[in-house]
Image 1 (tube, rainbow, N blue to C red):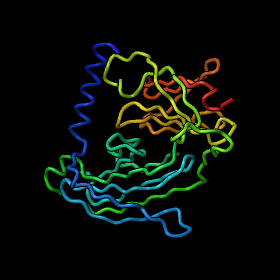
Image 2: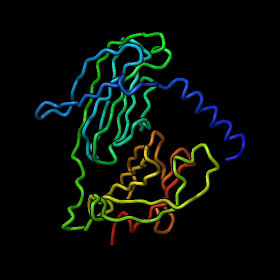
Image 3: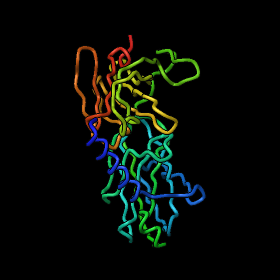
Image 4: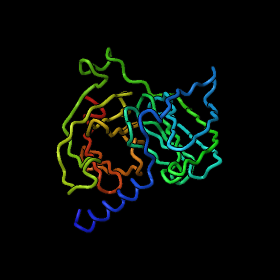
Length: 251
C-alpha cells in the first residue's frame, strides 16, 4: 500500500471510530435469544437510552442462514453482527439501516449488538425497537474424530502453514507472510471450515462447500480464484489467504 493509500485508510478509520458505538462493560446487557420449540425465528422488543446497548446471543451452526431485521423509533438505532469469540470486530456493521442475511461459516454463539450511534447516545436519546432473528437450514456437522482424527484437545482435524495477508495488516504495509491455518472438516468432499487466527480479538473463518468457499465472517465480499492446488481467497482486495486443497479435503 502506498503513502496515499495509508493516509486514506487512516482517514477512513478515524471516520469509522467517530461514528461507532462506545460502551462501558456495565452498559452492555447480554441476553440469549430463545426460539420456541419447532420455531426458527424470534421477535424481541426492547428500548435503548443513551450509551446503553444489548448483546443478543444466537446459537448457530456452519452452513445455516441467519437473517436479522430491526424496526426502530430512532433512525440512529442500529445493530452489528459479531462472529463467535469477537468482542468488537463485526462481520456486519448495520450503519446503513439495512437488514442482514448471511450464511454462517462456523458453529458457535453469534452476537447481535443493538445500540445507538455515538451522536445520539451523547445526546441521551432513546429508541424503542423490534428485533427479528431467523436461523434456518441444517447445520453442517463436523466429521467425528472416529472417522477423521482431530488434533488432541482441539476441534480441528488438521493444520497447515499458509501464505496470507491477514486482516490485522489492513493499515500497515501489506506484505505476504506465513499464517497458521486450522480446519474443521464437515465431509470428505471438500466441505469444511478453515480458521486463521490473527490476534486475541480476531479469527478469520471461511466455509468451503464441496471445495468452494461460500461464506466467511468478514464484512467484505468474498472473492476467490484457483492456482494449481490452491484456493486464493481475498476480501477488500488486500486481505488474502492461499489455502491448499490438502487442508480442506484431507488425504
